[in-house]
Each structure stands twice: as C-alpha cells, then as structure tokens.
Image (cartoon, rainbow, N blue to C red; front, side, top):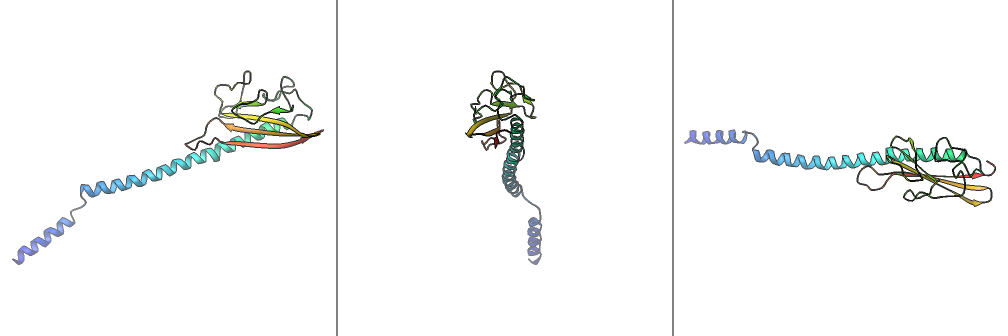
Length: 180
C-alpha cells in the first residue's frame, strides 16, 4: 500500500514535468501573433508619417522656396518672363504680372509648373500636367498697395504615403517692393 502511494506521486510528478501540450503552445502563439499585429500596424503608421512629414513635406518646402527665389530674381515690373522654365526665358510668360492662383487642382496657365519625383522640372504643353509629374507648384501675384506685390507659392505632392489622405504641401509668401 505504501509502495502504491509512492508510485502514484512519482507518476503525477513526471506528468506535471512532461512539458507543454499542443493546446498551450497554440494559445501562446496566438497571443504572440496578436501582439505582433498590433506592433506592425503602429510601425506602418509611423513609416507613413515619417515619409509624409519628414521627407515629402520637406521637399515641398524646398521646391516652393526654389520657385520663390526664381520669381524674386525678376524685376518688379517684369510681366513677360516665362518662369515655367528654368532658367526663366525673357519672353512668353507672365513674369510678375498680377494673377495666378493657389489651387493645385485648377492651376492657372503661366502660373504653374510640374516636377518629377526627383525634383526635375517637366515640360508642360499648354499648361496641362505632363505625364510622370509628382510635385506641382502654383503661384499667385497680387498687388495689395502701390509699389508692393505679394507673391505666394504653393508646392504640393500628387499623392501621399500611407492611409492618411493628407497630401504634403508647403506655402511660401513674400512681399516685393518697387524698385527692387
């Protein structure tokens, strides 16, 4: 009788140390999978935000500043330089004539240009968006008072990275006075 009790204790001790069952392993893997999916979704959101705000938005700011520098290099009264090409042509354009607009979806002819994904200027035929464009730049010149022109440039990407739906854009505004 004593020997039987000893045998039972040893058997139950061996069974409890036998290892994990298939069910325990599946539950542990299921929990691990749930955690990994949660971390991956946060990682993908972080990557998209970094691409949109860290890379694309910085490039739109750079391209808006580049266009602004090109426009500021024109004289105050220049209304004929073509700034849709680089370097600006002496004729065939709008120069710093009052006009234009800041709507990238409805650009005004003579007040918009397009860049590829690397920032290279693309040739636009008749003001239409050329194939392969990734950035659009639109500008507007207003005359709020005598001897003063306000120049606004907006640069925007064609699409964004990820599910946010907000395309990166940057706007630069300066005042140019006569005779400069």
